[in-house]
Length: 549
Image 1 (tube, rainbow, N blue to C red):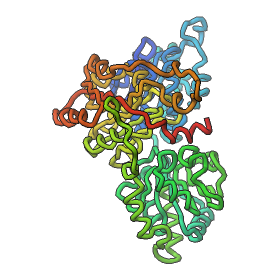
Image 2: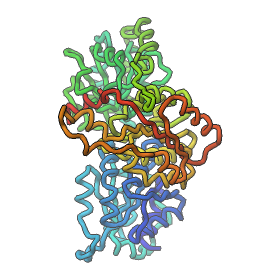
Image 3: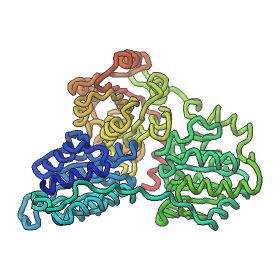
């Protein structure tokens, strides 16, 4: 057995979930080893696509996403996807072939470790045949238990060496990290702040996924309203006092009720500029508490009154125990009037709008509302970046917190199609739905062939304004030439048919009848909806975000 085979076998035994990649000479052997030992492999058309597929897969499955790339240019091609995963603290392991130490004149030679670190990933290496298993286990453990994106460099000379005599046939499972219970003093401090508050709001982020039950119980005891960051959308579905998404995507009612809070507690939530609208959702005098597993995250984005190091579920339970010592549930913010307002006003589809549709163009809000009605509820919604992104985020519902995948930490457009493929593989029982702009979709369109090859019934909703809309609406002043970010109308539906997908052009609601027919056909290929959208003047949620650009 060669070291390349040993690394692949070790990762398979540790529990690697799925590998995505573009195979070249340097990563051919390790990719085949992973496949031989039972790790499914998806061949992407570009390494950037593979990296984001692995990122989305890991987010939606809870298992390690693996990327396999060639040395040098294979790694550089994947860098944007690696940066997105690293900024999101997604457990992804990139297996990167590396030129041999002596091959300094190789065309592929570069400082791969420095590249990885430059975008926030950790750099590890298989140093020798003797250390190969230990190096691989350490990289796996760092990714899974440390919630890091790790580049594991595999030098070609080491890959080709024989495994040492006496190498064990298997490796021991890596234990997961224990759930961290907060300090008693911190627990009592938070309980005290909750008891003093009259209008508490709990905001849960991605770090609170899996803690929904415990946070709901604490909210009931505390009289608190519930909200989520965008990436945790769906966590509190079915809860009468859930406000939906906090931040740029908040409806006017949701924003008002959060701004009126006198206590905001973030569970596994960074309380960043997106979630708090550059801090505008935090009123003067409002106490702010942050609960996180990492000390360095506490107060990283804004001043806080109390930082608690602990698991979201364990913290909620610990505080609940203290509060119950003082009596039963309190009403506080959970009045009948607030419940009624949430039921009638907190969803964007309840907000009255002026329909900007014309004979040739459809209002994106009307489009999104109708598709929400047509598509099955059991879905996984994935969103690219761009001026359009609020429409699918606000108007397309999801079944739970594992029904929404939002690769947005790097704010790179073009990751949406990759995201949808990785998420679809992670959640095969749900209809994958992609919301993307024409610019982002065309940027990553090579992977449409991958979706066709995988027979994915993927709905690609392209909000086509024939432009890079964010630049047109938010950075162009009167008299400024915008021709650099505007394009002729592109027949994206026709291009999709060329890839083997079903292509549909939509200019009005009647055109969406074809979606019902497609759903009834038991589809085994993507549906690309080329929606020619009218302008509503530019997304105000991006206007807020760009204040910190």
